[in-house]
Length: 168
Image 1 (cartoon, rainbow, N blue to C red):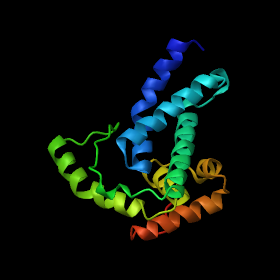
Image 2: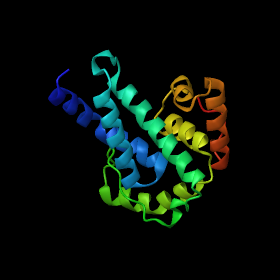
Image 3: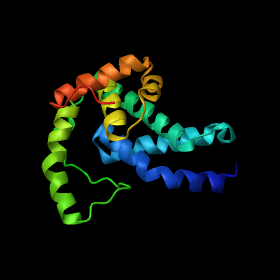
């Protein structure tokens, strides 16, 4: 596959990848770093052998975010609750942008506070499954656990949010 064609396919997935990374990391700048790392890994890979580019890129971004979360925890970094919530591009648009902004302001900071209480693996399992509907089989491969363990991690995360634990 030629570089311009690969770049075009990557750009078609950029907003999705940034949304995944932002929801896992809680920082637009770190999300951009994770997406950039995915681009670098795509360039170093055998792109011809990738069957599902969106799935492959989502997996790579998930793994990069997991590494970043683990590094953050190992360095005992401060939580992101003190940061201003930054906007993220989304494929789905709310009819009223003003309403979307108000909702993001009111919920975004609280969501980040709760997400910061989760372990990196719980956070990845919850965000990928509950927000982006990624299967537990795929999540398990990202976090190096079996699908049942990935399901359990997402279930524990849901309990932190006061949500029902049995989501399929």
